[in-house]
Length: 304
Image (cartoon, rainbow, N blue to C red):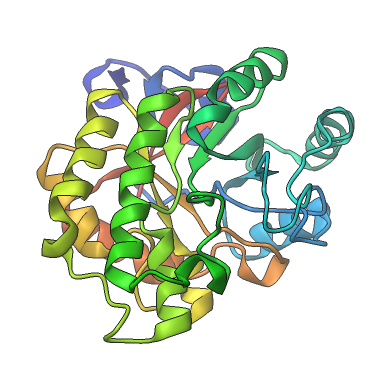
């Protein structure tokens, strides 16, 4: 990537007008942060009724510079079959029209997807990504041995510690099986719901207990040029940290990881950009200077 700061290059201060045309360069904006929410769901997802237009309105009202829609695709979701099937034809018929009507020089809209990874689905996901042109692909692990940690059934006949170990093992297996995602979604997603069902301290996730598993995941991301999502959806559940936790994010940074994405995982307008004002200063304190926004699957670095 090329850093504008090293070039003798006079460019318009309104960088948002041009940066997506130059998707292989780092964009530096010194005067203020240009925050994007790159994880949100709409009526195209089985767990949301939100109109895309309302999400756009909320993002603008909250001072964001852009967003990316990432509606769910979870094939073979046994808890509620077909809940997270995505109607691709309808999605790509309607979303580009919504984008064209609502995008402007100072506000950008991406069309992405959140793919629920399971190792045996890798060939099917590959074919779908060959057929459809997304700006951004989140790879998330929602299903472990047929069960989603969102539901209490996942925790039957297993203690919380073993549930977490199983989850992290499956995350690693998934990202080894499938490489065509851009960012790994909510790495410690399981903790969000472990705490919901069992509370603290029973469902806390002591970093040292899972350090070796987490390290393998993070090193894999770094080695393969993937981003790590900072998902602020946890704040909707009363948590005080994003997924993954600040400790994991610090560990990622210490390992050499610099590529992150920001997403609120909003399913309704009020949650767009939730807790960004809390999380961004902590990310800067860790050492992160940039986050990635993707256009046509190419990362653009934006200053935090």
